[in-house]
Length: 565
Image (cartoon, rainbow, N blue to C red; front, side, top):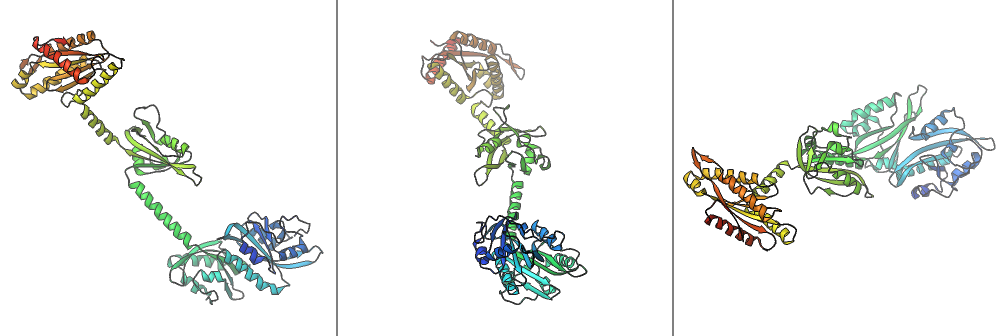
């Protein structure tokens, strides 16, 4: 060790807040020198005995490196360095320290890392015993076990040269044994306690270790508890002494009961499997993304609807895979997921979106995007759920069409006509526009319907409906009101223009040559017109006025147009 003075941030009786009080209480009055460091090697605590020892050879302990052997070529230095960089779990070594006065102090040095319950961050505990003070050796072991007990780690020490096996109280306790119970340390007895599925694997590891072929760092296995159930053990160990042939003769390590962790892992795995099966079984498409909108999960339904298989979709941006646009705005992407990620809120489409699959197929879907939030409420991802609503949308459109159209002719029905008439009347009363209402009553229809049958009558109605629709403008409302009566709302026209258009309709109907089963029938229509100019306040009165005009046309010999008033 370098004997030059160091500047230490902590006095012997101070401790960094990261050191649990149980460790401070344990080590404070110890006759063994104890120093505690953080994972980087910075000093967090030294007890008085350690400072007393340090005064002899280094002055003050600033870092873990201050306790390393001076001879960098020695096995002790190499072992200490391996421990410092994390390649050794436990360090036990013996080496000489040159003191400030030039003398040598032989020290027994042990070190290990602590982590677990009650310890916020991993710690390194180093103990130094002046070998000349053999009476302190037992105290050292007690303190060591107390420290590991605080971390709920059981210590074991197998010394083949001396024929001894040593187990700490925590080691016994985690297996359901009493703290002072004698333990049969024979290998075959221990192997018999292991779970049958683990026994062969662990036996192979131990064989390699005992032959010097390999030493284990970490193994996991199940061991039978005194109560009969199995517990999971996380065991860390290394050989620390070898014979002249390089065969390990002493191995030490620690065991940790990780049964709760394994149970939680199993529960999480089961829950994950249930969720995966559920998501893959439902008909709704599900896509998950990270905070950048890149896909991390896609279920089978989503694969089918988007045309992207899971291997191709993972890692792609969601807008590449899920190309959806509002049906009323086909040039604008819906971007529900992007909005969700930006705002950290649920976004639900209130409209059908048009989803274009990779293979070009188009579907109409309803979608909802929900954020995945961290503890601070920030969006770290999103889940998009969407349902193929193509068939539903088609049915809705059909129902809407049926509710507003005449099933025979395809024209608007009376209900749709009345809504349109009310709207036109409202705009006229507001002084915005002037319109006209026309009622068309067919002449000679009874002769066709009674003489040639209802099929002939229906065929004639279809022909006349097509003729009227073709004569009117696309902005005009043309409806079949029932029987052989048709209604027309001519938008934005003067009465003169309406009369001219009505005469054109009448002439075309009169010129229609209708033949049914080689028999020809004449056609004609009487048409009544009334202005929608705001002078009449109700649709009912408008309808009566137009109906009176139509009746006058009938009385005037049919086949003519009469304007009300």
